[in-house]
Amino acid sequence: VLTYPGLEPVVERIARVPTTFPYVPGLLSFREIPAVLAALAQLPALPDLILCDGQGIAHPRRLGIACHLGVLLDVPTIGVAKSRLIGTHAEVPADKGDWVPLLDGKEIIGAVLRTRENVKPLYVSPGHRVSLPTAIDYVMGCVTRYRLPETTRRADRLASGR
Image (tube, rainbow, N blue to C red):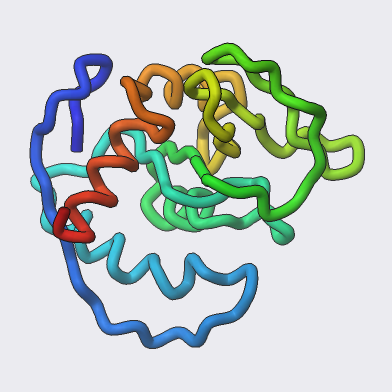
């Protein structure tokens, strides 16, 4: 958990939970949610906003991990993915903060966001109780000198023991 906008660490928790749900393409959140909930249960309070390493509504069922977690907890969530699961998009301009809509047909399901110059963009989509413009603003507010937002980057490093 980090402060915002300062991005200072407040508390860190991890949970290791046996996987009980089989791998089913498009249903990855059902495998990951138990560990996420176990880690969040160790916190003194739920965060005001959660950035998830995965999709929000930019998902074939419009229910990526950010939506799933947000609905379970009724907490605002944003999906921030490193790769595209569905949808099409135009070329993303090269400057930091530039973005183009991620489309599924004519529906805007997210944004393809350049968080740094000369790096691959991220796929940002609303999860729960967050609009797309707000999601983009928060993700950019959590980016420092790396491609990933600090929330995701730090959580990944903590969970992997790096």
